[in-house]
Image 1 (cartoon, one colour):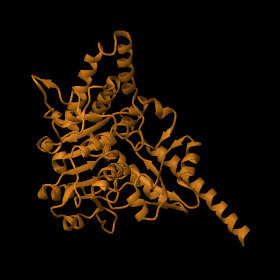
Image 2: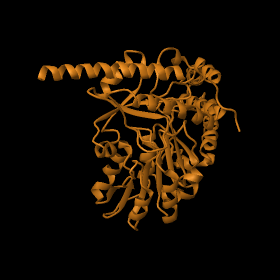
Image 3: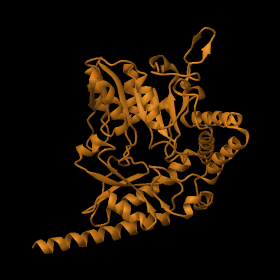
Image 4: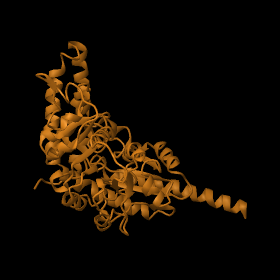
Length: 411
């Protein structure tokens, strides 16, 4: 077993991350701070392209891409042939969904209540006109997707089960493996949105039994924006017929075009080689540190933050479930999430603020309009938790005074 991360380890990694000297960053679920080495990998490739020509410099980028593919496969317990690179998680998910083919009246898609809005938009855009239906799987009392309810919803018309493993609006961890068992037993395609799991949680696609899994690299993985990972199970490829292909995904062979027999059928020939170089470095760093070590560092910090925020008068922690990821969602009485985010930013603290548009099914079900989201990385240290808690306490106290003042004026 690898030794646990120490504060000295984390401080050393922070010293190699320029942003850590500038801000207190709790928005890793939005986009994390890249290391200096990741930045160097990107800029070095760009300089080489400027000096030698972009096409002529592509060999170095190709080597970095294949290294990234191998590291991503190891991170997922997959094979390199099952990994594709896309420009975003939404692009990868959308291409895989479109490749499922035509939808018919009466077809059913079962989704978790926490499904990412981008996935929902993609589904509705296609299936509504066909007369197919998107149905929400009920939740257990703790707010997690109910495996029992899902099992009772299955029939021959279900063509897809989709799950957002860790939602954008809180730290709940949905039972992805148990849902995968049901999908496998019934032979139903199973898509997992792992955007908020990638880089902070162990991902084993064999245990998950998913056909497709995607995640943007800019979040906890600390890769560059504009890069994402798409896993497609090799044995499931026959299910997917991409709606468009090019010379990479369907090369000309002899007298016809043949679609690739690996996940790269979802890639295109035009890609930012520099960004792939950055992604390669970020993946190598994550594997070198170790996902288990990362998880064991961030979970206690998130738990500590969750407990301390809950103790502040006027602050309500909004996380569901009993098992939590490194995302902490909360609201402050009398003040909108965007304003809390702005107030914290004025103190040099970065957090996220999510509204109904990001996770509409769950936010509407809980009667929430917005939440503040603090997300923890292995770059965060206990002292930063203190800074955030103190700042939120000040904001909450100020809001309470303002509310009391309004009440006095009314009375």
